[in-house]
Each structure stands twice: as structure tokens, then as C-alpha cells.
Amino acid sequence: MKFSEIFKMSLVAIRSTNSVSVDTAGYIVGVIFDHRCYDCRQVLQNSIEDGLSGLGSNTFQVQKHGYGESYAVLKAMKKKIYAMNKD
Image: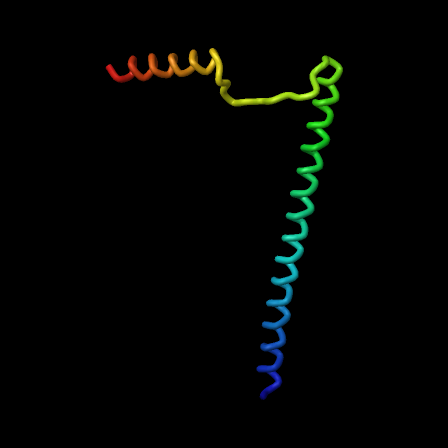
């Protein structure tokens, strides 16, 4: 083999190794970021629960839509809006 071919092959090998190391670094950063987000969520949840425990409640639940009267009212309003737009 000529020296130029060997040199080109070595450059290709170095480039592929760099891309693998960059991908690995990206995965490591992603995992660390995901873990930190989970930790932040846990801290926030604990803070909220501590604040609510002072009010005498140890549990809480957040829902986008309730299953009681408020949900029925929302559903009725959607039906009225749909009927008005249908005409």
C-alpha cells in the first residue's frame, strides 16, 4: 500500500472514532440531564407536600378535568358550542 492510502485510511478511522465518542458523550449528557430533571421534580413534589401537610393534608391530586359537577358542566358547554357552530 502506498503511504497516501494508509494516511487516508487512518484519517477515516480517526473520524469514525470521534463520531462514536461524540455520540457516547451525548448519551451520557442525556442520561445525566434526565436524572437531574427527575431529582428536580422530586424536590418540587416534596416541597409542595410539606407545604400542604401544614394545612392538614398529606396527599394531593391534580387532574386536568374532574369527574364531578365541573366535568359535567364542561361537557354541556362543549355540546352547546358544537350546536351553535353546527347551524
